[in-house]
Amino acid sequence: MRRRISVLAVTAAVAGGVLFAALPAQAATTAVGRQSVAAGGGISVNIDELRQQSADLKAKANRLDHEGEHEAAQRARAQADALDKRIQAYLDAEENMS
Image (cartoon, rainbow, N blue to C red; front, side, top):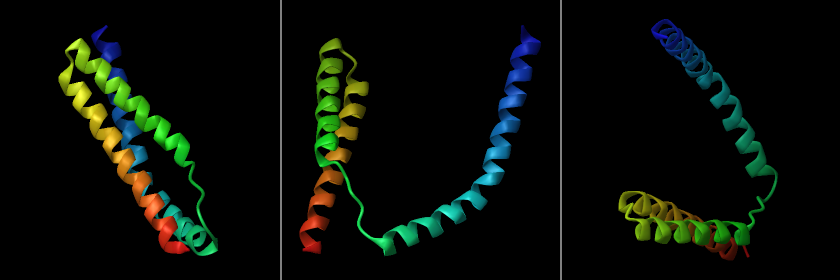
């Protein structure tokens, strides 16, 4: 059993190292892709879906609070707040474009 766990750990470390080594090359190609997308036109975002995700996270936070898991509830609320800020940024950007 110990040998199997150590082999899995080494395999995961090697795979992680390969992915980490390949990351800079992939990051350069995606940065170029983002520039061309930004220059090519607008980005569509489903605001209603983001609002639903935020509401789901807030409900989850309330449920976790009720169950006594306050730290997990705080993390869920932080994620919901981040979504709310992103929604507001999208709406502000849309207003400024017109």
